[in-house]
Amino acid sequence: MINKKIISEIYRKLDGELPENLSRELEEYFAVHPEAGQQFKEREKLKILIEGEKEQIIDIDLKKEILNRINMEAYTQKEKKPEIKVVRSIWIRPAFRLGFVFVLGVFVGFMIFAFFKADFRGAKEATPEMKGTLYNSSSFDDMKTADVLQYDSPLAKAICNVRYSTKIVEIRVELSSLYPVRSTLEFDFNNFEVLNVQNVSVNDQTTAMAASNFIQFNNVGDNKFIIQLYNKNKLPHYIEFKIYQNDTPIYQNSVQVNKE
Image (cartoon, rainbow, N blue to C red; front, top):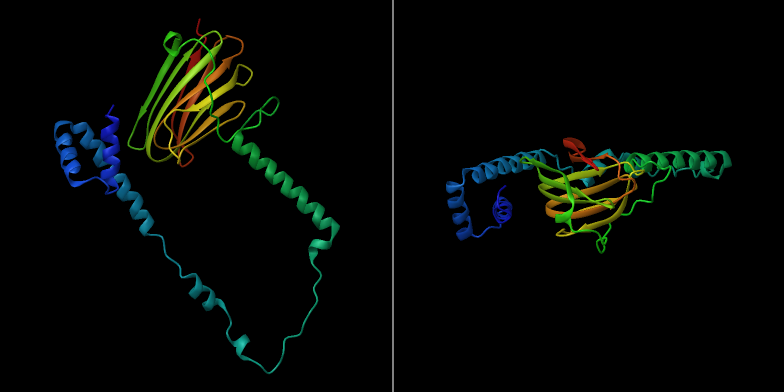
């Protein structure tokens, strides 16, 4: 993979923040490492495409639009004063209030279910972000390796390293993206329980949340996470790793733990 320092300088050059001397050094680096130069060109094309779409948005003069829709003649006629009418609000009717509360409750419940996708038979309440001390288990290097999943494209780069012991499943995730991407780890809550989600090198634009059967990362930039799950029954089970761009899946793979 490309050195993280070079990726950072590529981002700064795309944003016009890289000093001239470093910019020349980066161009020299591209000459020696053509794969890095290709990555820069692809990200530059992507940035130009996105900025081009933004320029097509029509800037509407809201004040002028409102004035154009007002019938000014109604304000210039002073021959007759408007008649004052008393209108009873529909909100004071009990049937309407009960119906509104029922519809609102159904809508809110549906939105919560669609967002968290959790199995509510035994699901824990989702937390917006989890940080803390890692569970006292055997070291990561001493654990058995399940698999190492890797994804590399102009939109995002990811490494998902999964290892396990008889008690703990530890997952180390590295995410890198110039623009926002969403990534999830999904599993059966009957087989695993979330013990810890730790932000190792996270910026203020990136968040993590955990529910009973999945963990979600909303990533921008370069970040690392360490996740620990309680290995409930030590039987073979799968953990799915997915990456989304604008809610469209761009990568999906799975890892089996407890293989023996």
